[in-house]
Amino acid sequence: MNSMFTKIVRILLGIMLVVFGANKFLHFIPMEAPTGSAGDFMNSLGATGYIFPVVGVLEVAIGIMLLLKKWVAFALILLAPISINILLFHLFLDIPGVAVALLVTVFNAILIYKHWTQYKSLFL
Image (cartoon, rainbow, N blue to C red; front, side, top):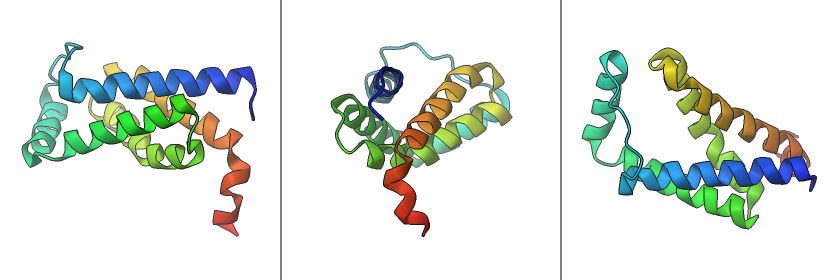
């Protein structure tokens, strides 16, 4: 469970989450606004006023937990629905951004698999 590969995946995922989560507040990475159905969807989510700040806070918190190696199993379970929704958004509405979404989802799945012994009792 403490292999070098797992450590690299955990650190890379943590960095990605902190950077993209913080970008939801600080806007230091210029992002091109999506058009069409993706733009309509993003605009409706943004109009709620709470979705993006909540997701940003969760991403930063999960990223910090992964980087500090604290509550990793809990952080990965919190990230699972977020990463699946990011992947589905890009698969169905904004295919050019699917690479990063797929990377986040695969990293999350790898780490969940590596920590599977901590989740076994949930399925008994």
